[in-house]
Image (cartoon, rainbow, N blue to C red; front, top):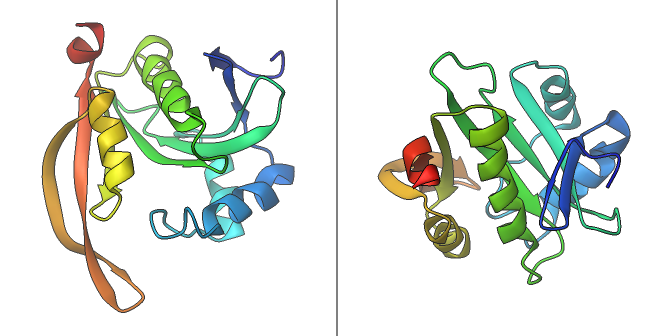
Length: 168
């Protein structure tokens, strides 16, 4: 995993390149992911690649196969509140999402010196909410009917883990 700037449990992350965006867009639009993930255009992803406050990364397994991607926002935040904006895994049912989440938690608190790591998760994504709870995230609240997707309003939960909870 020499090409990766951070790795843990046979999962590594490296900066996303423009050449990776076909993979990213396909992962985002895959039927298993699209009901739970905001759909960005290629231009929005390119803009994120150029934003110094955002880490846009490819997640790979030990064989160097791309298995997902993530977007982490607020890495320059003075409040040390970092958002796990998106995590998408294409190879489901193998524990890769759990491993990647553990890696991002460790990276947020140990490498990026976060005080708070937070995310939002759609109300219909029970699998992800359970994963986040099992990793130590706490539900802070429900933002009701804040998303309009295919003419239907949807709510999402805000969840976070604090530095002392991670260390404890």
